[in-house]
Length: 104
Image (cartoon, rainbow, N blue to C red; front, side, top):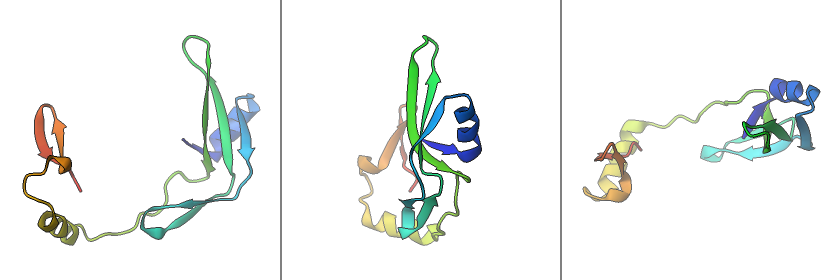
């Protein structure tokens, strides 16, 4: 779970959130990129329909998305198709009872 800092602050004022680990925490991303969770890790406690309390644990960030690395998909698609056998169900997914090529 990832929670935005403003949401964690609101929930904390209601007694439903608490910081469990102080930041900054380093996050590894795709493409050897790094991000930082400046506000650390939080526990969010919320009631569900039957009155039980569910605890969610996760990082707290000001922005929930960062910049994504750019890949040249045309070249990647050609490379993957050459390496993969033509009929290999490991790389297909069942979509409404029809096997379709997984988007890579």
